[in-house]
Image (cartoon, rainbow over all chains, first blue to last red; front, side, top):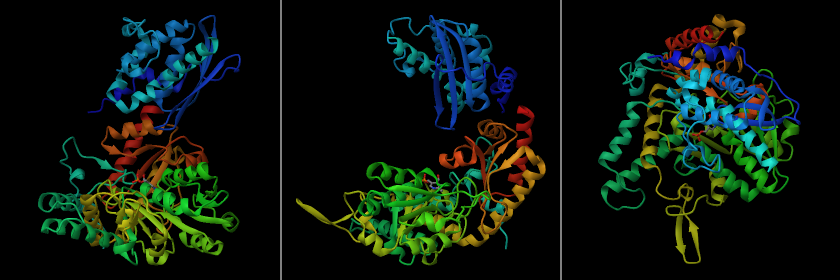
Length: 164
Length: 411
Ligand SMILES: Cc1ncc(COP(=O)(O)O)c(C=O)c1O
């Protein structure tokens, strides 16, 4: 009956045991943003260094379960070095994989024209992140997996708002 | 005579080895207990044979509904030793509502800016947020009895803390630590300071005999679903003269004696606090639950849980030594319950509970609605296993074995 192997893939455990981009960045100049999962008290802090529309560096601190920690670690590896647009595309693809679709996300982009929901990056190209697909079978844990991603979006939104 | 948990489980449909979906090892009774068939039958019988609204109809089935509802009140009141069960037992939705009732009626009439309410660091949010709301709304001061290093409340500074307090509001037993609070010195200190005492009995009433006639508190709340009863029913008890002096809580039908276009007068106790159609079936179900517990005897339930808690703590420590940190007092039949919170091998509680779930073992992972306590303990969350009369050593063994798999997966 288990299904545990679906949830705890080896690559997930690897990111949990040796998280990438763990630590802090001096803020400012970096942007610091916190996310909470009120269900379990997990908290995550994302430090974002965005220069000329590119996420040149990012670090993660905070505490949480294996799913939230490994998801954050994979996110940091996937997003670092990408443009903000690409990062947002990744978020959309990731959330689609978590079975969360634009309608549930609320107005995230503003210009939700036709095609806005089309992932910039196809799920097949999510690389390591695809390992988190098994989380979908454990609905309570979806919140754990998306915590860092929501926090990232909040950080990007705040940066954009500050520039506008 | 000790309890035969295996025989008791036969009374609980959900705990049957033949349960659709597979048997479960239920170790989460501190969150909500399971209920025996007798409780389900009592509710069913009411709905199928004599459902009508209470205190209204003159016809026979309505009279019978009223009789059963009021009989449940008296049974529940006697169960906790209420001196006047027919008038002092107020049915609420749960203990959260019972505490809020006191906060909205007694406290809003009595407390002014700067008045002190003394709580403790181990409180469930249900006995914290209503007072924090009053602090925001009218500037009352909250003080906290600290948690000691032995996981009991540190009462060494109690007289200073209680000085000037109007109310002391504390748990009678912790839903996280398994600490059973020694109410006697708290009540004595409150008396000396002229403060009233409210005790949150949610984790005490299901597990050991309570005698409201002698424990000396003024307000006492508990909740049906943790004591084999249904959800949707809880109890506030208070001394009659206090209830009499309190303004009503919710307004509506049932709680009035007379209504004119320019005003109303309130009904007698306890109906003054029961606006609208009450949870009739749930009250009857709770009545059946206390009857079931009485037939077994709470003293035996207490002995059984104390012995099982000692067994569990010993086994967990023997098996895992330094890998497990137990947040709670040492085994002690009088001062410790069967609630066992721990952190394990650096594995997050979510992951512990997830792995155990695949073995049909139900434990709680999280902050247990006690975030200030989590901060005291220096953790975000714990894993909690909690024991009740239907658990036995086999359940504890299943937990110990399951933790080995957790360790193997994450270590
Ligand atoms: C000590 C304590 N107080 C209050 C509550 C709240 O109970 P309820 O949700 O039934 O109001 C609980 C249980 O969750 C509890 O353990």
